[in-house]
Image 1 (cartoon, rainbow, N blue to C red):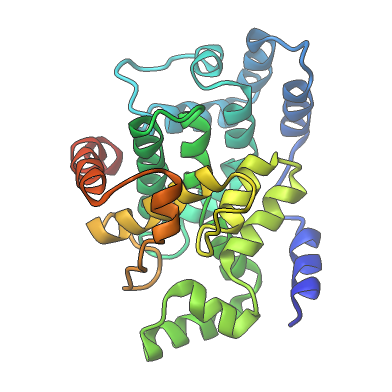
Image 2 (image 1 turned 45 degrees about the vertical axis):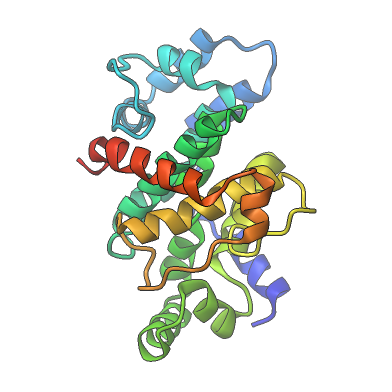
Length: 272
């Protein structure tokens, strides 16, 4: 299947994500600079299921808040409009992820949290937004499993038979990887490039691309989470960290050691 044909297939998917009227209304409000956090909070809270899901994730240990977050407006103030918009749009995919590849949900949670750890370690702006991008970095795997089951089986067979990395097996079977498919879906949602690009290129880092710093964070976080054994990305491999990604963030081997120590300390809450 050609990449252009595969992209058209992904963009025609109606069930992933489902966008009920409440979500459409909320995203329009979030795109309006005149909208207040209180107004959006009330709209989200009008959908009890959606509100409960957002608050559950916010309080899961994913963001590491020391005090419980009891209301959506409070979450909006702490996380910002962009992060909440992404969470609202992502809920159906996150539900599917929890039922998808064994260990993928835990891997994704850990990767998102590690992205936040790295972003704060190097004093980047918007660590919460970078965290949610890390949370979604493997959502393309869910799309493949749900909507291309025959190809997904071929990918799994190649991983098991050749001890390949997941994205290598996908590229061999489909011509593209979950990184491309996830980015196409985010682009369909009209999310900004600082969310789309890092997901598109987290297995293929190059410092000249837009948002290279965020891409480097996700690239490194994904590999560290694999190395530490938090959840599963669907294969047993640990890719090599790009030297260029390390240089982009001005990180050395000693820094990675400190980051991994922070991961061990902070990940207990997330895994629980």
